[in-house]
Image (cartoon, rainbow, N blue to C red; front, side, top):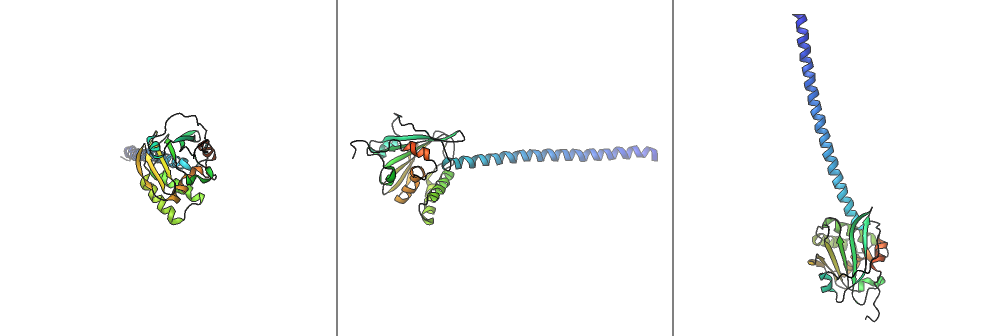
Length: 234
């Protein structure tokens, strides 16, 4: 009986070990799957945050391309009589196209040193999707970096931008029309989004692209390539 009982007990012990190993194997498999899923989510969050920062807070390569004969968007043509292209540049980050920027000016052009005194429109055509909230927050950070407005003003501007700026997809166009002494009117794909009626905001917002301290100096040069008043213009 003792000799015969040992093999039975051994088989039972081996069975328990095998069951324990099976449970451990399933646990390890579930842990590996969860880790892979977490990594994927982390990569997605990192990619989204990176694209948001790239919108404005980047050091891009830009190119001047003034010979574009295409007409201005309807929103620009309706807001600025005789709108003409001053210049355009492609914003890139690590080789990825973010948006094509165009500056539209009236026949009198724009004085880069006093752009806040003139009507013009900044036209951004996006090459990829970005959230409106991120665009607003990054704009706010650049306005603060450039030193425009006090804390209360910037808080009000950020709230207004969050309310107005939509999420964008590849091909969407956001246009900001500067109204000197009055503020900025925004459009998406020629549809009016609303306005921020604050002249100080207008200067602060467009300084992101047009101020000499911009983080994108090559893009600024491209946009202002033909900004000077046309001959004979008043």
